Image 1 (cartoon, rainbow, N blue to C red):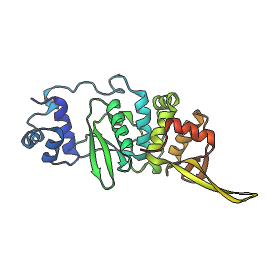
Image 2 (image 1 turned 180 degrees about the vertical axis):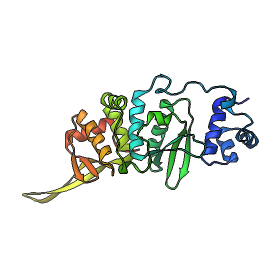
Image 3 (image 1 turned 90 degrees about the vertical axis):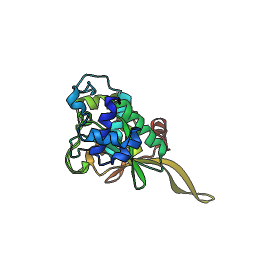
Image 4 (image 1 turned 30 degrees about the horizontal axis):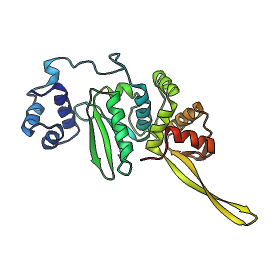
Length: 253
């Protein structure tokens, strides 16, 4: 007898378009068993009401530290998809160049919603860290039709309170998704000639003016100076600001 969580995961992966063979390989169950579940042979919803799983709906505790990080990742490279059977899928795209970031996103997703299994879906040049439960819609009310930069993005009061308490974790999520730490260079004329020197700098780019605003608000909470270096980009280049971001973000890994 397989646990109910395994059945839920199998049905959710079916909604995401995976074959019974692939689902069985991921969950460690026979393909025939997955096919039986998909035919309604053992539907958890018919057996009993699902146990409480949502911090927002059921009053369960929420890992605020991990949620602040996951919220930043979601606003940068995340989205929620609702496939044909109406099981919401939260996915955060993580480039294969940064396996450490991908691992951190998966850990945060599992900590925020422990009842939903986390899966890696292979894409070209990246993996989508994905988890299936309709309660992701409760935790990310910013979900809506169209791309984020085409609609208003605002935090709910309870989300804003978490960001105020953990601005560094929120910034880490934002910069891990749509930011980077680079070595900038400049020249300076001296008595001995023109001297080139390098210094570290952080960039965060996003097409949504609202998300850029949330990033600057978090930077202000940490007294980190910033400037708009481009219409869709802000930068942190002052030594004290870079040092502060190094403590909470640092280079991608």
